[in-house]
Length: 253
Image (cartoon, rainbow, N blue to C red; front, side, top):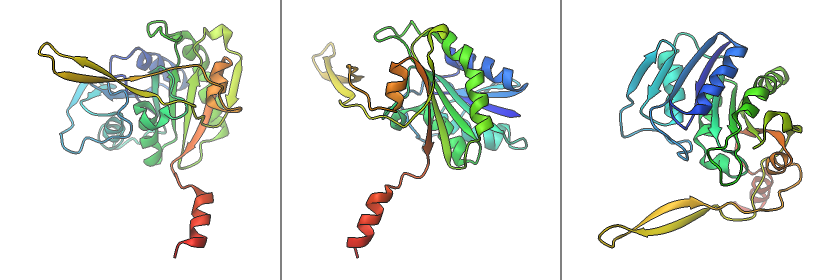
């Protein structure tokens, strides 16, 4: 099995190293193509107005000055153009990608691009305790990752479906199981603007994200990780709202 790995935290991201360790337990044919710089929050963006610069680090490690989507395209169409990957793994992200996070996530986008290109693809993210970005329990993903990926592959990934996996912010020994669940929806807005002023008194702004306790929907990815479980959520490329499609077809002429 030939595996292509990417992420959105960048070529030096710790989670990328953890994911490569996991991938090497699944196959001895692993290639890493990751962004040169941190691309968190870029979603499924493409670099259309700038050239893609490729830096070869080693025969199986490459950095691209672009987005995760760019990296997967570069990996499939250039680096592995004669040896199409059998699997794309994206991550392991520094922090969860749950609920509406999947809209913003470059990690999920990297796996989504693999799916668009017809390759089974999985996005993986590791949570950390609230307010403690340096306290990521990487041993959780490292310990459970191989088993979860194997089970997903054994079950099969349908065409046009990307699988989103989130590991809870707990040590490996405290994981309470695996939950196959739906994408959740938080009951509060994430984005806020933090207004500041430079040395000349001119305003500038940082986008920041609020996190508050909420009652996650039953059966959702949010509920799973809160309960110490690994969440596995299949996401479809087809975003059509079929009930509304049916209703519109009856009234719009």
